Length: 251
Image (tube, rainbow, N blue to C red; front, side, top):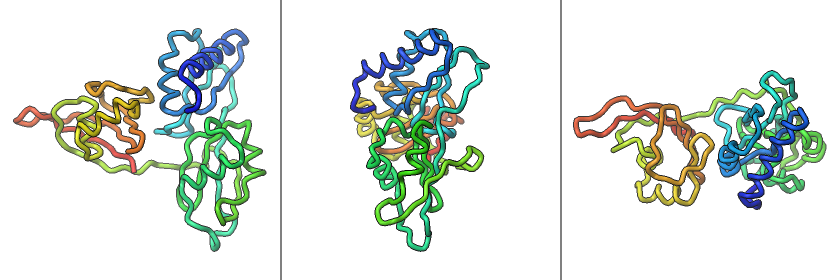
């Protein structure tokens, strides 16, 4: 959705919530990037009283869609599928990365917002997509670069992904956003402030542009271009008044 302005996304999300409310039917958005998710949270005040479920397919998913439901226990079908893409013959497979899989899917004419995260693992990729394009991907994707591949939809139970992380413990002057990100990624606070002011930092899916934003335990911080952190907790205070904290940096 990066090519659509904020006002369009805001209004479209409100219209989808209104459709759910007025017609008593489930309505799902496309996948939202961090900017879209931040707009969604801002738009909540203009939405009718419907149930909202944010789904990315797994914990810590960066791209998520929103499913609007008329009420809490309303029956619904999952609005996304998981597609496994693997080499047809591993003996002749190249080493493919995230960019290769994404490029091949976009070359099929698929808009980026129809796709969620792409997880590359153990020589294959798992792609989340809105279920209206699942059959098209499965029938159309046969080659990535010089590697012949097979795409097939798989049940959720076959996707067992545990994000890897590095545990970081250190001291910060305060629990401000810029201080914690600086510790997590090893950059100066002045450098990190540029990311924050440019709208490249989100906390729990909401873009934060204030470097003094105070973090809470378990907050998930995404920094476009650097990666993702989890602020676990503050553990103690040093004699000099600094705060010892524990972070997870996902790798």
